[in-house]
Picture 1 (tube, rainbow, N blue to C red):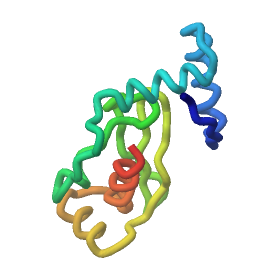
Picture 2: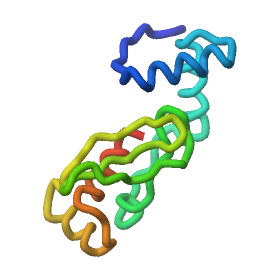
Picture 3: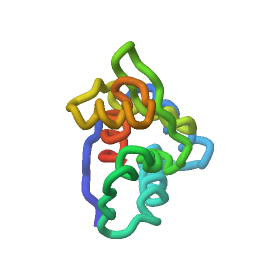
Length: 125
């Protein structure tokens, strides 16, 4: 059984997905399904909750290609985002959202917005 869905995918990411689909002799849909299955295949049925320092400091794998090759990049003077080095997927550009973000950034010598960028990336991964 399959479910029909619609997703908004950034143009650059869609073009990259099309290239991979062509290289693997698959439709874009089949390529997307294969990548999702690979990404989610090793995950437990219910994702374990991260707590404490691990929650903010460890980046989860890319939700699109499954690689662990992601990094935090500074967006503006007061914001950061996480980007996948493999497929170029990008998390939201964020500023510190609360006092806890400011504390984490101070404790870890992170850039402004890095705690929120890490948290949001991990939430969507």
